[in-house]
Image (cartoon, rainbow, N blue to C red; front, side, top):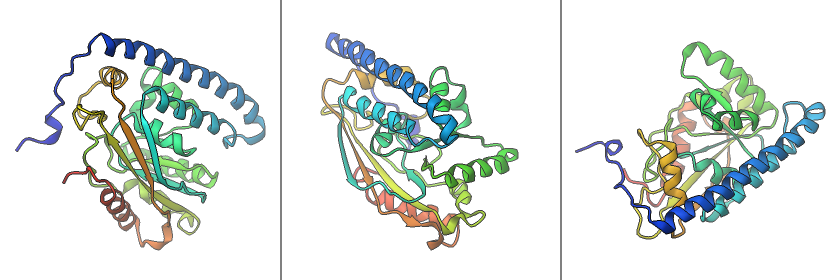
Length: 273
């Protein structure tokens, strides 16, 4: 049997109406991001002298931009449950870049991303400015990353990361890696932090491949963005905010990671084995 990562979606033909949607939605999306970014910089400049690395005001702008993006992309947006209020982190399954809009539209969070994203043209700079935490797979960076995690968590920033370690075809939940969960068990953080599992469910537009919103393997960003922008029918995303749990309810990172994986997978009606 072929590995699922080796089976790409069937190529789609984008007709005249599809290209009109690409141009119009693309223009509105770019304007939304640019306007939000400029406003973010203005607010951040005023915010920095008073609050420093904390971002009590500018994070609202990021959330507004993401909510606008959901509308521009023509997505139906539904949520269940409530984002947590306690200090801690959010963990979710990962379909691709589009998860960032869906998750940030529902809660003011800061993403944890692989270090390579920081060097991506445009996207990397936006991610840096909006407070993304970049992590490296190099073992020599582990201690520094641990300190950075702890600093941001103690600040009250709700970090969001994807324990699968990669994006998927939106139809499966991969086994969770427990490495990043170790940050919650240092210097007494386990006694004050909570973790909220979040299930992200993408539903393709009618008539499209069920994997429409997935972004995996060697798929390039530009062509996938064009595919999403060209959709003539509305797709949908559902965010399930599961009840948060105290970190110290679990003996170690592996138990906590396993619990989050089980909750997220069980609530995903489209997930395949």
